[in-house]
Length: 119
Ligand SMILES: [Zn+2]
Image (cartoon, rainbow, N blue to C red; front, side):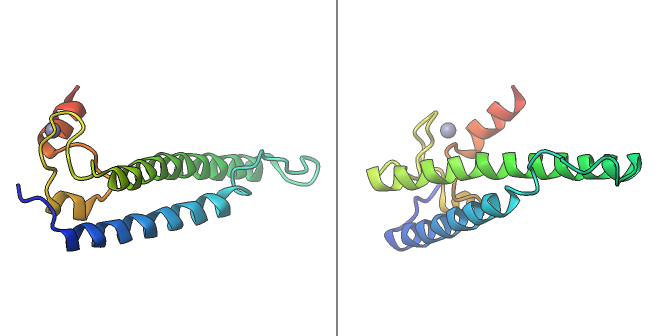
């Protein structure tokens, strides 16, 4: 698979930096949504309390996803600095621009990702 050119790397870096910023904003915004459900139980009924807890659990799982992705984005940006970016961390093959474009934080080539997913 063709390795990304210098120009493509710059583009991927910009995408990663943008992702990093978006995820940080998302995490900032979701802080309050995931705060413990402290509704006044004397005022709200059981149903709306369950609603609130449901919303909270959706918010928490979205937040966990964002945190995991942000970690990967940070690792990818660090790998860019050290020149390791774009190579599979498992087999050392070039990951390929097409895959990196779709998922700039990818650290595994498609073949390795497949076998990890199947495990
Ligand atoms: Zn691989």
